[in-house]
Length: 245
Image (cartoon, rainbow, N blue to C red; front, side):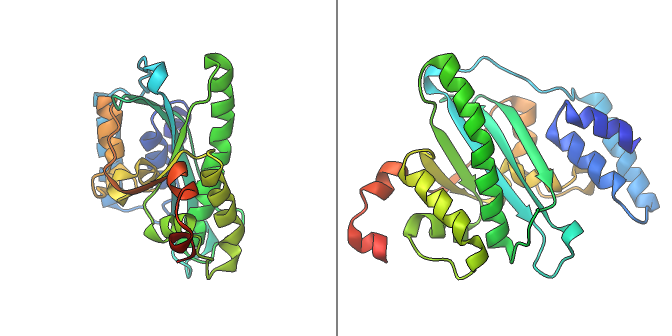
């Protein structure tokens, strides 16, 4: 059952793959787990598992990248996870997912801040290929927006403060340069419930808190409530006093 769901998840909705992975990795299955698995299969029978690819407004097209990290510092490496989600969105909030990833970190992350920075760097790097393809197709540069639900990362990237965790310093520098030179047009801070990538490690059969991914997959509209944002122009034009604070 898990193998079949994994195959479907590779070519379908990301929440299907999340559910299948969680089911396959459960060490000691219980009756409650079986009931939740049955509920998951029943839900898949009722809803389409294929993704929708609506026609987007090319003039207002934007590449949106969302990143996540899960696992406290004390948790074993198999329990830690990094990932990202890349989508194309237009001004009317219509969207479709371009790609996503979720896997164990390839190096030690000394805390959620370093892990989230690592995930965001990889998301931006993966999105550059998408932007290059769109540039060739549309003959213009499509802006990129990055999203994080960790305020510490947002502050580090936008305030020029050096991180106390030196393992994450290179990632901060790369993201800061990407924001300064316009590779990232805008950096957004959102709540976890409004970060669709946050749902890639929370199976729906475990009944987690509602996430914007559920609504986005069913309606084809992606609306994330923005807590704060910084544009490339904002950072470049910031006075020296605020940049050094």
